[in-house]
Length: 292
Ligand code: R5P
Image (tube, rainbow, N blue to C red; front, side, top):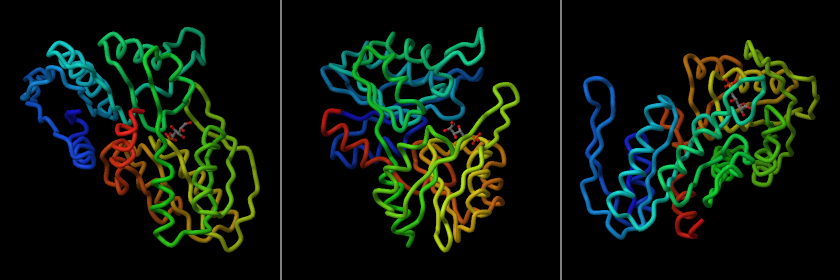
């Protein structure tokens, strides 16, 4: 097996290769003056089981095209198989037609990936695991929540309450609570499909004297996490932390969350950011070893 760290996941790809003790094949990469991507494989891929590691966080469109180019070229260069490791898969949140006429981008991205002839797809905490059923090739979503929860526990937060900002986070907080052992719950969130504004249904948790952690798959504008942190603080939680797998941190998201009363934001290197404290390299390496 050889690992190809894509331009968007250079560090993570190298860490995965190190964890597995296999070769990381560097690529030559540049942008043409008009912004298009140029990529050249520097080593031989013939007959190899190639693993391309490329996340598709912002700028999503560029990173996604680079991913497609990397897979397609690996196939052309004679790779025996190509596995796409895409820690954050872009466009996954639009997984249905919420309003008539909307594009279902999750499905289109799946089709594009399959058109390259990719053999296997591995992602991490995909927004809606049901979206994986669109794939005809083996496709899995790994969970980075245990890694995040163990890190948080190491910060002295054993016994902290785990909160999910919406029902979609129920599974994640269940996983976190198995490690933190402080109970869990989730809010009921509603987002206006046109304005994007969010509102929470009131729910009361028993938080007196407890620390708490908000767990979510994605922090984009930070609105969801900030509102969840405020809820926890207003219900008497002591210290509140924000943990998330894919910290996109758009615009002032970081300040927004810290100003809402969070002590710290803990993210992973699924998407490199200022809060990428926890590496998901061991999770990916383990899955590749298992042949997931
Ligand atoms: C949505 O359901 C996701 O799980 C996240 O809660 C959402 O994407 C976060 O977005 P934002 O940070 O913009 O509120």
